[in-house]
Length: 441
Image (tube, rainbow, N blue to C red; front, side, top):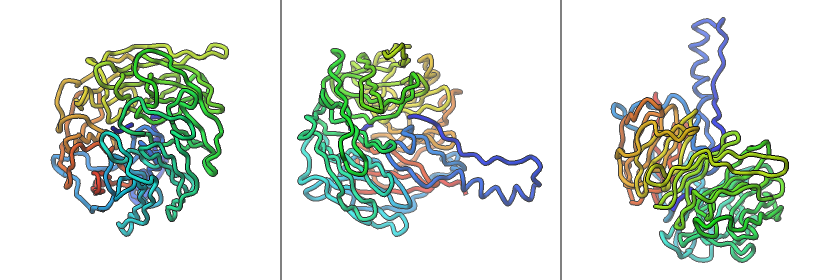
């Protein structure tokens, strides 16, 4: 099970109208280079919104399919996505008798180091790694599927500190598929979700691992189940207060960033099997979804009255109308794009403020079963569980499939989330990393 959006950063060059045509011709390549970033430091990118800032990518795959540039093997078994900082890619996988974090030098296309983070391969349903490492200030943070949180030196993989969700915090999952979180590094804090009522979320000092606070969040409804879900934490400024928002076993919660104080909880969107997608925060609103028959989708307005917070339901759509099983959601402007349906990735476009389904939701895409997505250069890339990768226009005007391809390696279920950075598409498939060219030149 995979996990599982904050702000859309637009990098655009500003040109003065007085510049001559020749000056623009010289400056244009520099502008394009500035719009193609090279780092993707953690789960769903720099802002946890699954939006790439790359521009000038191949606009239509029907006429120009992405070319496989190279493959790297030896990453072990797992469903983790990838992080990229300073031409080094980080991921995790089960290799031999342990679960490890891997660093790949993208210049040499070889594994730079591999550090075991468990004493044995964790046992749970769908064995394999889940965590997408977070990279910050020369350190790498990852959560093993048995609940071990590690901090490693990015240069050589040397362990710096370690915590254990279960032994130290009474951590537990809502069900039996292993801890699946990708940690969040925010300022001096590393945020994770052990899942116990006394320590649902914890904040650790990122350089030392020292506990800064733990958030006691008791069950706040009957839907879902106690414990952590399969999602990952995001940042919100709802009500003018910085807070961390997470989808846990009982639903969506918000806790104060400075001390972990529980601020609000919303139970209705939870299902008892697995709450997976990372929520989306926008202003005073939180958009959340979960799968299975008892999940659904909700938009919440987070309101502060005096010292009290409330999560007011703007709308709720039951699972048969709108749900993201897993694979995630992307908000672009006034619309959210995602795959709808349990064990399905039916492409759908939703007006997030109203819940109106603008298009899709019943139409099979280029592949089958659930789809992991990322947005780039005006399009959404769907990576289906069956392996196919499709390019779909990110527009409310209608479903526009712009081509698809089947990657060189396909080991179903293909759950690892795609990454687009530096004009390239990165696809992790169990033991193999595939890198495709997306640059339109």
